[in-house]
Amino acid sequence: MKTIKYLFAITILFTSFVSCSSDDSDDLKEENPVEGLNLVETIETDHHDIELYSANKSFMIGYNDISIRIKDQATNTYISNAEISWTPVMHMTSMMHSCPTSEVSLTENTTVSNGFIVFQMPGNDTEYWNLKLNYSIDDESFEASKNIEVIADEDDMRSVSSFMGSDNSRYVLAMVTPVNPEVKVNDFTAVLYKMEDMMTFSVVEDFTVTVDPRMPGMGNHSSPNNEDLTYNAASNMYDGKLSLTMTGYWKMNLKLLNEDGDVLKGEDVTEENIESSLYFDFEF
Image (cartoon, rainbow, N blue to C red; front, side):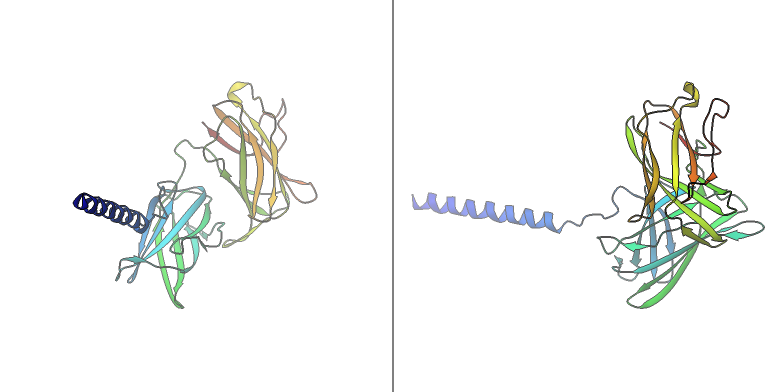
């Protein structure tokens, strides 16, 4: 009887040990902080591999949300708390220019930084984008740069517009969401920048972008419950609502209004004027 009790106690102890070991093993599993993203580009330096991740498989014209990790080549580990800034430059045959960017900020995982770049145009055989990174690790400064490929949407849909307003200022308006539109009232988000010079773009505050979605292939009908895009100071973006009542090809006819309500770009859709000169479009 004592033998049976002894064996039973050993069994319970062994089971508890295995269970605890399994739990400890699960706790030690490292989560991938860029899971679900694609490694789009790696910039190699003498000391580091700088990895650029995005939801897309390539950098695209329009809004690109980009995550960055820096790997130490000597230790093969990712570096925490790096301070990063970036400068994208388009090298054209007759000039150079930059594009709108956000600051690069650390995420909850301190090995990952995040920001966005709005590319206004794709590269080609003779014109290309170069991305320069300045970063510091433990107060030591580094530089890195690489020519990167930026491509257009294969369906030739418009998600960014660079234009001259009636106030003689140049603006860049880019759609952020919806990424995957659905038949419902979708969150509609965009960023708006003013071109100060060829290398400098500033966030435009307190303008309005009116929204009039239409289906050109279905009698150019619109939809109810849309909300114009207005400035959100917390995100530095413009938020509104986009109502899509069926699948198919949609054109979001837009107008840009300044603080006084003056129209800087775009027109009303009427029977005589079936589309605005300022728009986004997609098909889903």
